[in-house]
Length: 558
Image (cartoon, rainbow, N blue to C red; front, side, top):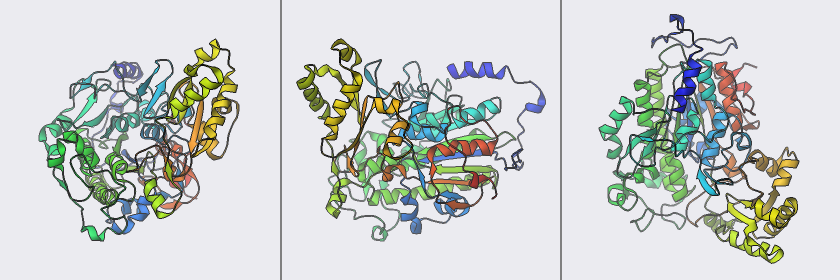
């Protein structure tokens, strides 16, 4: 395994003496570093997939005291925290949180993107050179190979000569792998289908650890394929829309998207245990394994800081299917509040109050269903991206006599065929501007930027700056377009994300625990500031591509 070979070289630098051995003392309190900041025994990173900032405030009165409220009221809350790039998708989000930089540097420009060399779409963590562990098939053939910079978790491994333990856990492979980084001890993700088990890749291990195998064998995940009804009486759900509406997509086999959902009955038509991913019980499964990891890996039990990266992804599946204003989303967050409370109690019991530091954020937000906004009287709509490639081909063929100029259109980017351009002697800058002018003339297209503009200029504010921070010279396209506010390329049911607009960029950022000052700020803070804040807390090097800055008021007294 590549990771093992890297660590073998690293470990040759370690002095084999007893002073470097890990001490297992559960009662040992956190130490203080030379920076004067209290050092945690464990850092926990929580990413809630598709969590808008206003889910903290919108559902606040419905939350209990021991979950989100505990973090908000006793931690440091950055209420004006945003992504500082586009696109706002899951893979770039997780990568940016943990690298402290944007896709322009770390290279994860989407969940999937068009590879200009391979001439095909690629998945961000797929690695054909890997072998699935814990399952057959392709689901485990994954690694962080396409992530071009180090993560804060990598830097912790390097700083401690590999003595820190780093574990990533999520429903989604990318939600476990990208936070865990290149040097992690392990990353585990959930395979539904007919199995309902956590798996991994031989990038990390040749077999599942016993504690993961025990969880899989227990059948606990399978037991959650039961009824999903509202946690509380549905008439009390005043912070959401009505249960029966025209803006949600029901599971296959159910006529309307209304409670209750008989998951056993619906499973066969919805991927069997894959159905769990689009219910709150997917978050329960992740919390189960995260708690099992505390004991199974003995995290936070010695004088070397460990790191547990946890991503709750079911919130994203549910948001996509039912939309921001749905009872399903509200119920999911009320249930997630209980899971976070359960997880915090386990951290208190197993690591100790005051011995761990936790941050909570999201990989992106989401837009209200445009059809709903339109019916409410707001400007919103839909853009047909599926036919855009053919329209572009027809347009350039009329002018240049060759439609092969357009090689690919995806992720709101146009990729040009350079060989064709050179063969027919068309100036690259000219054709980029020509296509940009055409796109700008289309309904619901707000702004357009070209590769030439991205590489020759330096933008410091506005949408252009967000595009530039998400633009990777080798991987990104040649013309990028931005849709109007609340206009999406999606079905007319459910929500999506990916834009530069505030509903996609504004997400929570809460720090809590050892070394953290309680308080809040409304000054602008960015997703890239999380990793350097953790690095400063731990007294370790920033990730090697880091462009963010530490959130000083969360760490240091004024």
